[in-house]
Image 1 (cartoon, rainbow, N blue to C red):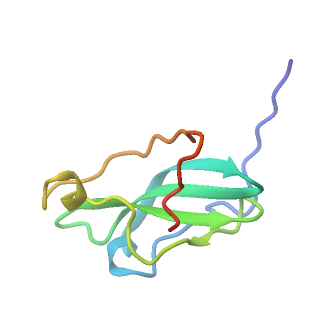
Image 2 (cartoon, rainbow, N blue to C red):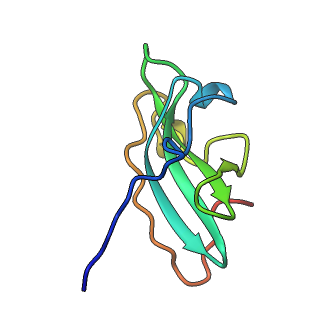
Image 3 (cartoon, rainbow, N blue to C red):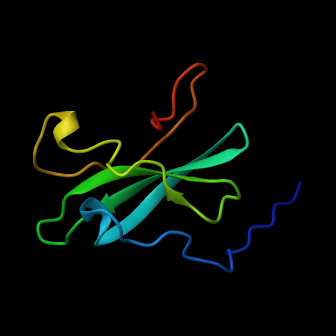
Length: 103
């Protein structure tokens, strides 16, 4: 079996911007394909000093053109019990019957 991987000519696929919590950087994404749609969980930062990260959720029909699925992060340091610090790289697995964070 051979596998050919090519860089997308529209790279980078997502860029910082929009809500305050993702204005400085977006990076380390994880993508899930479910029911004909792509869902990207991104690590995002609103500023560089202090550097606090959250995870945002984007969606796409084609896996290249993504839009925010919701205006606020799906995971923040405060949600995990700390107002400081950062949420690290997303690791995702689709569990049967589980939602994707879009509602």
